[in-house]
Image 1: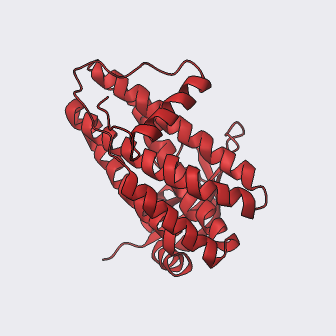
Image 2 (image 1 turned 120 degrees about the horizontal axis):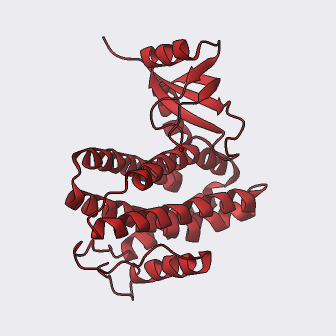
Length: 270
């Protein structure tokens, strides 16, 4: 019997929940939703599934909207094309890599994590720091109401990903697997991707005309052709710097990564 998957828009009922993660989306099997709803014991409420809360706790989620996941996906495919659709497809690749990282953490595969996290770092650099921040975000700031505020939230997420990933890879060099750090990275990235796919990118699609979308696609393709992959390097050779002490240093590191992964720069090993 084929499982029925449901896409659920929810609102966290915990009073101290952060503003940006209070609302979200999660896809669940129909039977799993019934079980989580039964555990909550309140109509229209279900207990959060594993990994849904970025802090790792079981929270009460209120159902805001519920839709067949397959129908929602097909609607999205018809509605969004070009550069924005490409970004969504790249999200799927990252989500698959996060599944791999979770499996490697369980197996304590430190060398596998060294390679898989380097691959995700490359995705973040090209997708988030280059395609989105250099091409998409300036267009969003001009075209969308409150565009600057929306872009500001996304930029902060990107800086957080780079910082967490950098810190986790520093620990790998010392032979440590920091479970709390990698779990935070996985949850944060999944939540970020969900918000972009379900809210941010569809909103952009509505406000940009076809000419601007074509320009964005062309610019993104140029960046992809010019991108030089970062090499994972030798895990046992100390090369990564420790956590950034302040935001200015983090900004400098991000700019340096952008530079060395563009034509004209030299790809480096960490």
